[in-house]
Amino acid sequence: MVRMRFNHNWPRRGLALLWDPQTLAELIDPAQVISMRQFFALANDWPDDLPAANGDAMVVSGMEGSIDVLDARDAERWIETDLKEAVLSFQDYYEGQAGLIFWLPSGRNRISMKGASEQYFWRHRDSGKDGLAIGRLLFSGAENEVERILNTDDPNADYDGKHWAGLHHPRIS
Image (cartoon, rainbow, N blue to C red; front, side, top):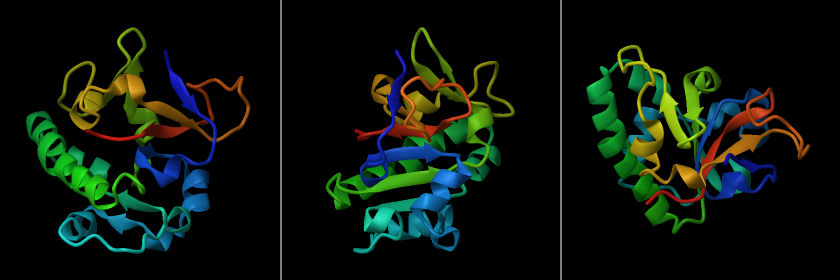
């Protein structure tokens, strides 16, 4: 069953993969989005003040480029170790009271879900038919808790349609 997130509190907690530019613009001045390199540099010294969602979130760009330059095996290893370790450090530092948002401009076209298993995949150039198991790698297999962010309050909106703006997980473990 696909979970959907209609309210606007999602940026303040958990992890999100966002690809809707309008939603991004509502959260942060694009000049304050940090690079993947800056994100990893901050992992040892997280700032007290966060730039997005009125001080409750951080937005990071460059995840898709980082995945794309690696072959599938190295990309899986990077997501599962380096990236996930930094995400967990962020969550621990802010005690789950801040949101981490990865800006993925092409995410809408590259993330897919198998409905029967609720598994999410990232289309990668050499990862086979389904792609990288992004849900297993990043969400520790807790894909059943992933919510689709919709940029509408219409409860009848198609969760695969034009209002699908990203994915949100309340807490990575």
